[in-house]
Image 1 (cartoon, helix red, strand yellow):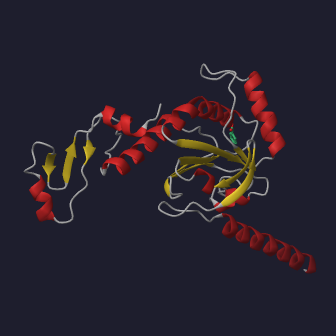
Image 2 (tube, helix red, strand yellow; image 1 turned 90 degrees about the horizontal axis):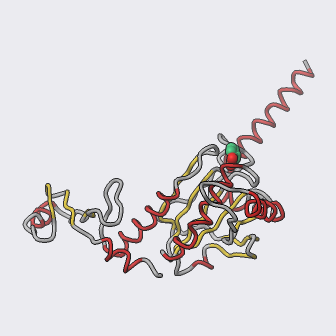
Image 3 (cartoon, helix red, strand yellow; image 1 turned 180 degrees about the vertical axis):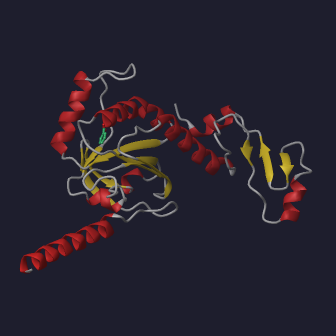
Amino acid sequence: SSIKTGLNLLYNIKINKMEHQVQETFSMPRIGEKAPQFKAVTTQGEINFPSDYQGKWSILFSHPADFTPVCTSEFMTFAHLQEKFRKANCELVGLSVDGLYSHIAWLRTIKEKIEFNGMKDIEVTFPLIEDITMEVAKKYGMIQPGESNTKAVRAVFFVDPKGIIRAIIYYPLSIGRNFDELYRALIAMQTTDEFGVATPADWRPGDDVIVPTAGSCGVAKERMEDKENLDCKDWFFCTKKLDEKEIYSKLIKD
Ligand code: BEZ
């Protein structure tokens, strides 16, 4: 029975450790909050996030590990689209729980050997954070123990020019992200900021936008008279035209 007590003790210590780990790793920043500050070593030198990106949008994204196929396809796609994001005033910052030398070797292999979706000879020039201690990954809730204790899930944080988190998207380890959606979401957020509108389901630039409901039903009903500018189906559902060219001329810098 003393062996049994010993085993029980060990078991309890393990459970306590696991509970402690879950509590420790599962903090998560939220939309509308300041992006947690950190300093990190990257493949492009040291960065301070989000302060180095003040005045720009940034996308901080995590991936599970270097030298893995889904991550490789994602990195190539992001690198291919980097200029497109940059023209929309948005910088990319990647993170994985691997070390700097692994990152460098992986990115070199991608450039030298990997072809995917018609892309080859792809150079990744945006910073890739080394996070072997998982300090940043834990701060941003990128470690989700139900999925993995040691690998970051595929998290995407959109941070605005004031350093505020504006959108968060999470994907599991086995599914590569949809980069059209990341760009669409970025342009939608910039459009809502610039034009004071909201965007409906599946919106793309050129589609009608939603004019947010005025404070009270009475005031909102008055809008229904404005047939020249608004198309109101009821007091709470009004849309208007917003020209694609107007959006791009405001948001995209060539
Ligand atoms: C991948 O990137 O291929 C991958 C990484 C971790 C788990 C599953 C797939």
